[in-house]
Picture (cartoon, rainbow, N blue to C red):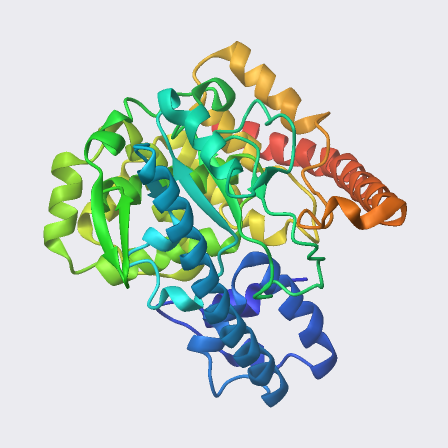
Length: 407
């Protein structure tokens, strides 16, 4: 499903809802499902009131109400986990999610969120996992993927089942314990020394919660790292780009922040940040502070060429399989051996599927539920295999265009 009408309606400059008005009634359910998946439904409802059909506005109003209830549950879960960690003297910082500042989102109650991401130094990691396990959370997978920066996701087995509702207040909250901010071994290039993230942590007041979090400059850098990592892995969610655009638009006149970013931000992350900034600006037409514009303007020439050729390609992925982000990844990796490894990993993936059906279901679900899970994952793997096979031809054409442009 092409989400271009939604992207146009959510632009911060030159926005247009004309394409939304032209969407026939029968096309709205699949479009909303795609927007749900990409995390854009709630912003669409908030910013396009009066420009949507009555049935769509009613549906999104219900989603907003449920998401606000889910936000309360997330806050309560975080408070419980934080109290347990603090009682054992385990230091941590909250990543993303509840710690997002006003620049990323106008109201956290209307931001889709499914996990609570917590960073903990490795020396305390085992104790943190034991503490969270003691609260009734269980790992979904036994072992994490080698490219991951966190332990297997932990969730309570409540008996909940997926009901095709991304805003279900009863959906169990997952906990992800992170042990690093960037996986250099997996990504093939360094983000530099990220210890300042931990050393400059702050406590942020959000509603009635005291949140150990990154400082605002470091939080922006981490958001860019997170966005680009998902882009390079072909797992980019449009919500990531929209929130980056929201930050850039909202902070465009904040000279104090951007002066601090230039003076104390991590120079080693400037290229990654420039990629995130340019992607946000091109997709959502947000304003940029001059400092952010400079980061975009000084991107290396191969990265600039990639944007000229493929900067909007992720919007076409569903209809036109391709892996053009692989070419961007290869621009950033200095070693030829790592480039070969990453190319093989993306072109011929052999890792098992990343989906788990009804992760929150109890173990008492019986043989029928287990069999349903097996068929669900098998179907998912077949769809992914077909996608990867179809993408090879598209990737060959993209590679030729890339070679010609860089010659």
